[in-house]
Length: 511
Image 1 (spheres, rainbow, N blue to C red):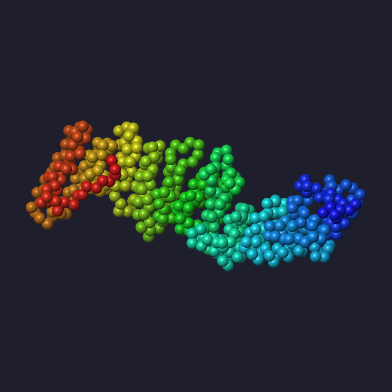
Image 2 (cartoon, rainbow, N blue to C red):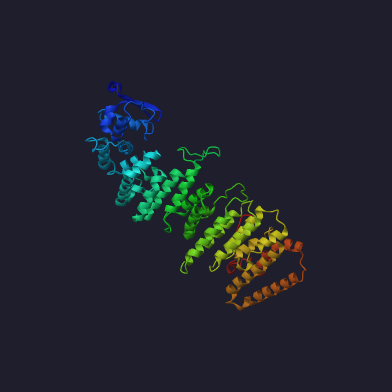
């Protein structure tokens, strides 16, 4: 611009960069500068004009316009140029066909008419002063309204990560200051919940998911998003996420819950994800409930208290007609108990509370106690250092009468169980055998003697145990052979009567 510099030049510093410009050319286009020059005709203005709220790049566009050069507007520069023109009073009332009118015309015809262009304009705003000015001019609301209306007309613009990927710019590229009000506006306009939820999950993946390369010293991702920004983002995502059942798989909700916990999001945020998982717990898998414990003292591998809260939310929302859901959740909780039982750090009290929770979940269903027994067996195997009294306390949870024949057979030979429990299992197993054989031989009176003989043996054994005549050593030695002997007496081993025996060996848990 030096060839246009005259004796009336004024130096205007912008962010430390000096611009030497002609006073008359600036005054011809800017009412603000014209008034300023008239009030200060002879003073050095370089120190007075130092608070123009813009960047050197945008100020240069304004200066080129004043010198008569052609201006190329883009979605990225039109908003800050409009804000600067408004600040300097570059309106048509001061000079015909001025900068502000040209910029706003481009914005109206080339930006808000397109999805990608509106997103590009919003993304380019990285200055708080420009943000405030654009808001006052109504440029922000115009952009956001345009985006909302276009999404309502074509929901696939929000994208579907699986079925319908969008080829346009993603809404998730926007910062939270624009993204949150846009999504909120879509919700108010009754946009489909599935599209909202899908886009929110994409936003979560873009702005919250922690890079595996991150360390404690460097908590910023490759995009420079700080941990605090991620925390703010996950809290906003939870607030915006619809509550419709099944709108996102439990696996994705669980993933977001884990990050909310890691980032120490507020209680409302974490509770919100737990409630959503609880409402569709019958659609979950065991992996969805394996939420790692976070914090400085990780006493246990998994957050069992979180699972208890999720289960509570499920029962608070269950209705009397959801019997199938009750059965599914009962099995899920048993499988979860068996999984966490492998945790060597799982405290006894925590296991007992979880087991009681699993037992309570089975109330009102037709489930047996095999799942509870399996979990107890795994837990005792992982914690062989437990004393007899501790093993007794854990096994007190087991209802031997509700165990299957196969489970009883396994337990009768299980050296990890206390003697008292083994005896209870033996009696329960004998009862199962008696019931089974009674059904099989009821048609023939010749077999009545076997049933009566079995009942007498059970009664004799019960009396002997009650009188304390069997020591622990004796029981440990003979319990492994009792099933074989019982089967032999009942004719289950001979080839002739094998067809009448339906007691099959089935390994309940690997020893």
